[in-house]
Amino acid sequence: MREILEILARDGHATPERIATMTDIPEQTVRELISEWQAAGIIVRYKAVVDWDRFNHANRSDLPETITAFIDVSLTPARGVGFDDVAERISRFPEVLSVYLVSGSQDLRCTLTGTSLRDISEFVSQKLSTIDRVRSTATHFVLKTYKRDGDAFLEPEPDHRLPVVP
Image 1: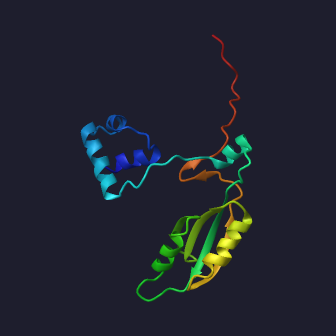
Image 2 (image 1 turned 90 degrees about the horizontal axis):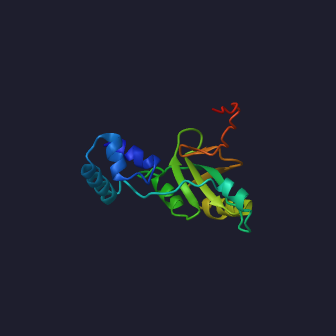
Image 3 (image 1 turned 180 degrees about the horizontal axis):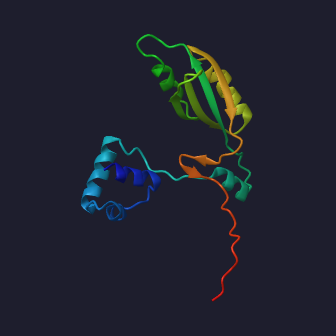
């Protein structure tokens, strides 16, 4: 059963027919499981993986590029809720893509986007740092993405083999 979810996580366009062929699970069973998982919220949504750097480079549009940042947040925990209430509050901001509870010197790691360094700076100074129990933040800007969520964004290596002519 997990194999079906792994296939869908890699390729959201995988059809039940193709999944059935790959897993030797009957197609009708695959369809039923996918429907059940969608209804139960196990499958949250399907999405495309976009290499935004390549898109922006190819199109040179007038739209501002998206800037991604990781914000490490140090918190004071609250009795009975720990960090959960602050993490939930941070996750409600539309510019925040992800929030993780992490080990180490910081408590939360947030990923967010903006159209400029100023956008990110204003978010941290006016929204994030003003939340009760936030002790400190550390901002790290993404300069280049090599791999995200298992998908590599590397240029394919050129083929240096000599051509073979029959």
